[in-house]
Amino acid sequence: MPLSPSEVERYARHIVLHDVGGPGQQKLAKARVLVVGAGGLGSPLALYLAAAGVGAIGIVDDDHVSLSNLQRQVLHGTPDVGRLKTESAVDALARVNPHVTVEPHPTRLTADNAMELVGAYDIVADGSDSFATRYLVADACALAGRPLVTASLGTFDGAITTIRAHETNGEGERNPTWRCLFPEPPPPGSVATCAEAGVLGALAGLMGSMMAIEVLREIVGFGQGLVGRLLVVDARAMRFETVAYGWDPDNPVTGDNPTITDLSIHAKKFSG
Image (tube, rainbow, N blue to C red; front, side, top):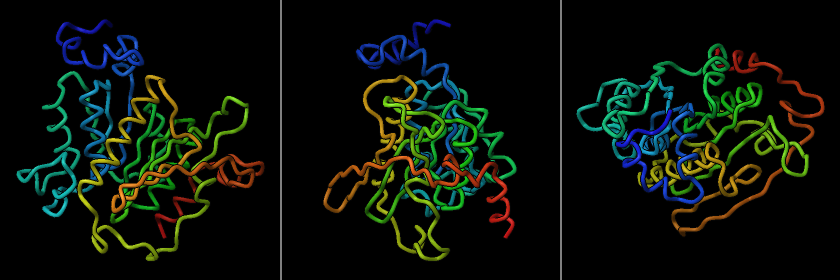
């Protein structure tokens, strides 16, 4: 379906970009993106995806807005305190762009629903703050054959990468999985939570915006993405570093002898 006159005006700065243009904007309009987490990372990510005209944005989050969220979770405002984050997100994104369909999923992502949710979208962007969820999403995307943009936040640092574990690169080599980079999550309690250690609010905006760029780039197909590369940001020194990583034949999802062929390992962890 061609863009309406109002959409042409709305997306004019994209359409004049050589690497996007009308065809790229049409790809965005047809795309379905699942955002995991409507918090510090998911807030700027969802806002920019909506502003860019991504056709359908699914948001998975079972949490409610609290006052302490507002220092970094810009999708929500003071009047939203106490509301489901998915409800607040629907209203906020509708104000940004009425042409975008927002699909709220006010539930916790689990081994029981992850494959269905992930499989309903073209690309997944994970901004969750839980190691259990991060590994669940990565394994589900690998098994479902879905691209994944995933990022994390520390106190003054962040990291982001893109994973296309179901594909090979230009040399015919298998792309790495999340577990090629980080085989196992850290022991429970070994990494301080955001509530315990704190986080620089504006850093969430930076990392979430970079997630949006990666998602848009993956959909439209321009430039060199972060597949096989981990971009690390040090906000104290304002330093950006990129670490290359490759496919590990011993990884348990897509390795030579995979041991994770479904999400049952996560079902045990969540129930335990």
